[in-house]
Every structure is written in structure tokens, then in C-alpha cells.
Image 1 (tube, rainbow, N blue to C red):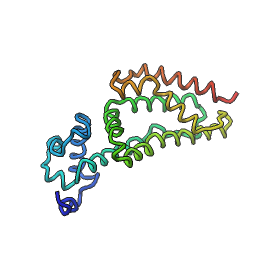
Image 2: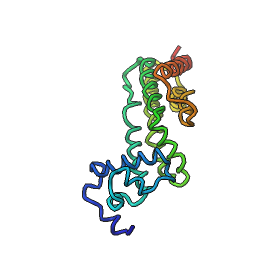
Image 3: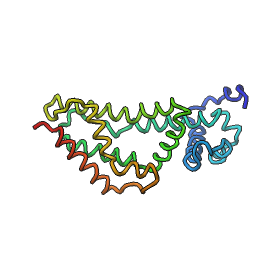
Image 4: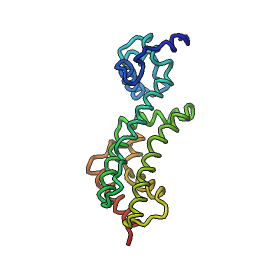
Length: 212
């Protein structure tokens, strides 16, 4: 494929374009079913319902297509789960709410397949792996750390290192659930299982950090 064809992209060749989204959705389906290395541009064109010529007008190769999918995932990760209200001093309720929402999202099989693909190509495309971490786990830890610091200042909690405390809590929220799904060892957890595990995480956290 020539550089002139790659550069001659349509004016609507952005994320707001219906055709762009159609191609990305097709690529996501193929990557999830076959993995990055086994997927071909021909497979992606077929899944997206476009010609290979049209596909190459929007994306020059698989790397660029996968980068677009990762970009969408990064936007998705930044939404909602750890949007704490710093004035809310009911720490138990806040942690239960956000912990359960996080566990549900991270154990979603659709996200697991994409995460496996990111991990598989992180050595070859380190910038993508870094981007996923910076806009996902790092954002969650930072937002929760800020909430915890606000509660320390309000005299509700007593924490020496809010960043470590936030990271530890997040990890305990998906204990026994995330890795079994990641490695295809077990199905996604039920809402009851999520509530049970997150409940333990919250009680353990408060036992350690609630101001006596």
C-alpha cells in the first residue's frame, strides 16, 4: 500500500465517522476472536463489511487499527468507576460502591480478551501498553488516593501512604476473581461473589485505616 493512499484519507476519517467506527468494531471482533498475530487485514475488512481498499484508506496497518481500539479502551477506562465525591465521609459506602463497580468492569470477558492482546504485544508496542496503564490503573489509583487524602484531612481515616493504601484496596477488590477469568480458568464472577469479595476488602481496609 503506497504512502499516497494512506495519506489521502477522507475528511471524516476520525472517531466521529460512522465508517471509522464500523471498521474499528470489525477489527475488535477479529482481534478478540483470533488474537493480534493471527488476524489479517482481509479478515478485518470482511468483518467490518468494507473493501480492503477502503480499510487502507482509514488505517495503514494492523498496528494502527489496534492503536485505535486501545485509544477507545483508554477512554472507557477513565470513565466513572473512580469518580469519588471528596466531601462524602461515608467511606464504607463509597468503597463498596466503587469497589463493586470496578470488579464488575475488570472481570468483564470482553475486556479480558482485549487485555490479553495488549499484554501479548506490549513488548513490540510498548507505547500502547504504557498508554493503557497510564489511562487505566494509574488513573484509578490517583483518584482513589485523592479521596483517601481528603478523608485523612477530614479526620475520618489515618493513612501514612494514601497511594499504597489505594493500590492495595483496588487489588483486594478483584482477589480470586480477576486472574481466574484472565487465564480462562473460571467464568466471570456473579454479582453475589463480587459483593462478597469487595465486602471483605472494605472491612479489611477500614480495620487498618479507620481513625480510632
